[in-house]
Amino acid sequence: MTSEGWGTPPVEPIGQHYIVCGGNALAHRLIVELVEHYEVPVVALVPDRTREHAPQIERLPGVAAVVESGSITEEALRAVRVETARGIALVDGSDQENIHAALTAQDRNPDIRIVLRMFNQRLGENIERLLRNGAALSGSATAAPAFAAAALSRPNSVQVGDRFLHIAYDDDIDPGRICIVADQIDRQDVSRIRLLPEQEGDSAPFVRLASEFGDDGPVRRADGGVPAQRGQGAEPDQGAGPGPEPDPEEAGGVAALQTLPSEPPVRISWARRLRWRLLDTLRFFTSARLRLVLITALAAVLMAFGVLWYLNRDFGWSLYVALLDLAGAAQPDQPSDAASGAGTGGLWQRVAQVVITFCGITFAPVATAIMVEVLGSGRRGQPRNPGAGTRDHVIVAGLGNVGTRVVAQLHGLGVPVVGLERDPQARGISAVRALGVPVVVDDGPLAEQLRRARLKHSRAVVAVSGDDATNLEAALEARAGRPDVRVVVRLFDDNFARHVYATLDNAASRSTSYLAAPAFAAALMGREVLGTLSVFRHVLLIAELRADEGGGLVGMNRHDLEDPGGVRVVAVRLAASPQTYRWSYPDRTRALAPGDRIVVAATRSGLARLNTALVSEE
Image 1 (cartoon, one colour):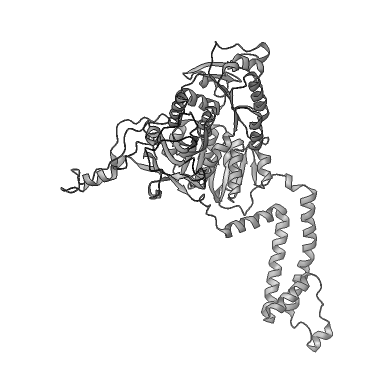
Image 2 (cartoon, one colour):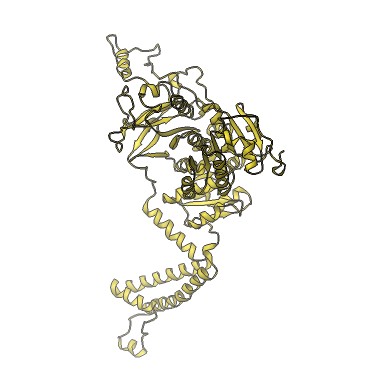
């Protein structure tokens, strides 16, 4: 182990390499992206060779060197040859540490491309102005939409212009689809998915019709079925090899890229939202005993008002008398009035007025007690536990960076949320409380925590802690407590994910690092990724590229871009009308001119291949 005080041993002389600083899951995935898809030399700077993902990083083929340093100092940057590097990615540590390291790297190499991970996106935007050639990204912000969408059983989307791109499956695919993005989907074995299979030409439908309904009628198999035709030759992604072509009847479903004019709304009726808000507000401002007193007094007032209305048969008069009694302004009957028949007219009416008057007397001290409890004891700074009004909510287990982002996104959509965290010092607890979201903080058994979070009345459980085993445990405990609850699990390990899909219904698995790493890798290469779309455990990148004068895109057409595989051109913005997105641009032979922009949907390897081609042309 290298001690920071003793110095860091330098790597062998190397140049035009990329440096990845960090030993976490994101650093691991990012290095895999760079060495496997972009095929560039990488030097890893890890805080400890024996912890987190550092041992796996050291075993990755294609990594030029692994250097250990407790912090990113000038000595550590000299050791990884920052002076001759093309880019550096800072994906571990705090925002402050990453900013300091980025500025230090820029001082030693003014031309280096810098990508740093920052949780505070507003601060990241300001830091980008201080960097000559840099970008600040948030891994949790990139991945959170996929988790939130999975919890609501709706597709996550990426905004492009005035439309939202999303993935639709099987029967949800409409005629306005842009392109097929996956086939051979087997929900029990997600490794069979092929991303961006080879597309059929424009004449393919006519050829199919001619072969099926020619002079001799449809071409049929011996069993009487009509043979289906599917694209072949697609490249695998995330280690899923194409293997032998399966029987078309068993090949599974398909997924298509489609557009929406706006994001799909969350289906929660206004009555449910109003009921939840009212009950939750009552629970927030009052304790259990005060709520009991208020509810009892209110019930007594309503019953007494009903007696008055029944005896007088006049709603307005009954309401008038009840309000006066409630305010303590009622005039009691005198014995002489009762004897002459000028009184209120009946024993039961007098009883009802007495009940209303005494209940009105209790409301004033109860209101005072509520104000004292709220202002004096500082209830707003104390943890909020979910109350009896919590219904149709999403439980987010793990309030780290990702969990905090997921809670904020769901809360912004108007979905009731309950946070669950074992560590009372977790950074996300204060941020979630500031949103007014109830939080269960307890290091006891998960089953008890989920019960306190009102699992029986929840709509989904999202387990997004940093540990795969803890997340899987939370998912299994949730299913044990409620078999039909929707479960979304954050898992780095692909084997865990396959078991989740194979054994659990109504479940989804996502990997934060797998969703975020392609965006970081593209940013390190100077490309802009607008967002990522999840296809089960796989990821599809939506990126926008500009054809600059003298650049590699100038003179290329759709055939040049798409024929190598892994890339689909979904929209074109011509230089003459840059504000107009031409979706599914039909002219496949038109060469791109300087100033044109294209929006592409690409696999990880497809975007890397396109980037390599553009760099070589430039």
